[in-house]
Length: 394
Ligand code: RM4
Ligand code: MN
Ligand code: MN
Image (cartoon, rainbow, N blue to C red; front, side):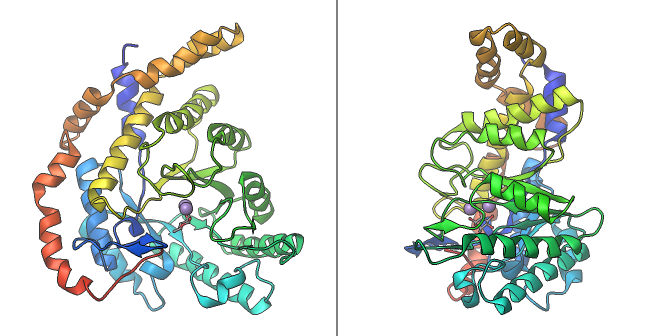
């Protein structure tokens, strides 16, 4: 397929993706953490690192913040604003944390105990306030709520508590804000999870109110699940709010996007582009990365991810939608399928390099970042302090 430079340039101009603050910190697995001298230990360092990703790629102007890890009680929002100005990245989605504290052992909004439900709700309402203060639009609600053994939880009652909590949280939103409801089939709960799949998230988002949408984390699906079909359904219901991108081989592995199955990501973008072509409307979707790398250099891995996302989005922009529709209507299966495959197999890298240069960016952001010496410099500066502080989930 001959790449169409104008379509591609327009697609690259509009594509933006948010990076997660926790992707720059030391994190680990259930079995251990491998610390990196240059990993960020403070909010200032996370902003600085996110600023690096944006300055080399040009497409990551916002950073997702996790409330407990980044904005603990007493945080001065003016200081956060200063960091944002200094490093050229704005606060993005705000992620409440109702899964780490001791009280949440049996859940948060769906906990049997009213005082725990109240505590979780207060934290989510605080998060909405923080988001307003920071000019952030999206609150991303992910819950570890669930149970580990059959018979130990009243699933219907917990569903009601979850519904009530989300509804109250929704009432606190201002006109422009959104509540994004994330789902996950298992982990940390291994028998039932209160929001286990997109159907449950959709139901809860609808019950919460008109500004709630579903968030699809690509790692939160069972093996073999057809994620692009879920995307198509949510689009057709106008209920797709955003993505947490990452790749997975076994479960919620948080691997680098496209490292295992790039065609999956392409097929997701293909559904979105086709919807936009068909309706003539831009889908209002927040693209975010939810990855934290233990072994790779964190900033390099984030740049690698962004470059991959950009490439896969650009490939999807090459799909010839008229030809695809004609082939579908006439049931020419091979031709229809090849509309996708031809686009996927096109090498868009030369055009993306050109686009970067035309925007004053380095043709190869990864190499440019490496050449900058940032990793070596921050490793020297941060190493001493890092011996004592580990901010992480694991
Ligand atoms: C969860 C989920 C959430 C993320 C946490 C750290 O599995 O993906 O979005 O905030 O991990
Ligand atoms: Mn996620
Ligand atoms: Mn996850």
